Image (cartoon, rainbow, N blue to C red; front, side, top):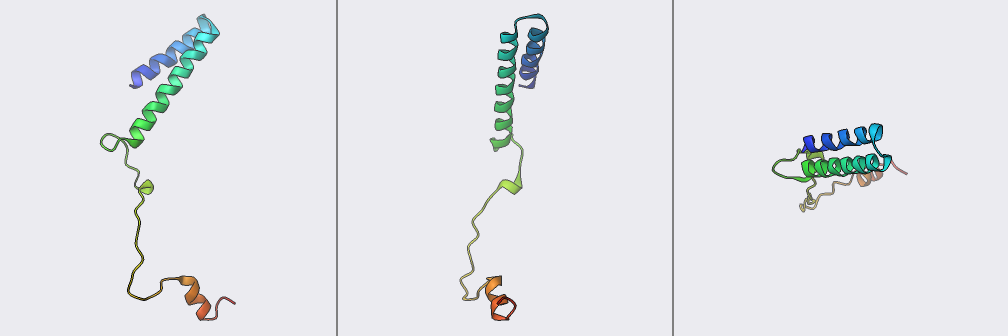
Length: 82
C-alpha cells in the first residue's frame, strides 16, 4: 500500500515539474486520500492495526458495599473545605 502512495506522490511531483498543474493537484489529492485510508486501516483494524491501550475504554462500576469513595465529601466532613 505504501508503494502505491509513494507512486502517487512521485506522479504528483513529476506532474508539477513537467506537466499540467491540475494533474499534479489531482495526484496529490489521491496521495492524501490513500494515506488517510491507510492510517485509518492501521488504527482501527483489530488484527493488523496498532494497539493503543490508552484509547481503550471500559466502564468501571462503583462498589455497592455502602462506603462512599467521594473524596470531596470526606474533605468537607473533615472541615477542610468550607
